[in-house]
Length: 120
Image 1 (cartoon, one colour):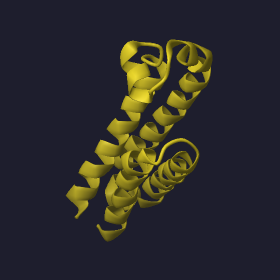
Image 2 (cartoon, helix red, strand yellow):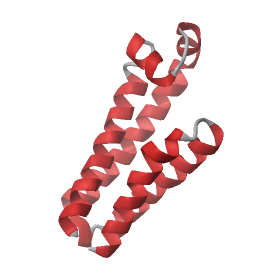
Image 3 (cartoon, helix red, strand yellow):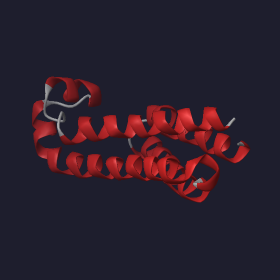
């Protein structure tokens, strides 16, 4: 169970690093616009907000990697729980306010990871 938790936490962290890259560096590119379904004009006008959002995603990934790397699944349980809960709350909020797909892409993997952390 500990190995499964470790792998899924690492995947959730990698996902949030990917979000950081998309939102901070690729937002205005054709790939970024296609990913988020925006126009050039919308991407241009929201780039600063997207960059800020990407930075927060990076902080979430850093928190998970810190908890996992410094303390492991068992020792880092409080840290991992906190950051996974933050991701779950953000995913639920995003699903309600932006797109339901966020629940599956962001909140669900974090919720499964959190369950595995507590089962380990």
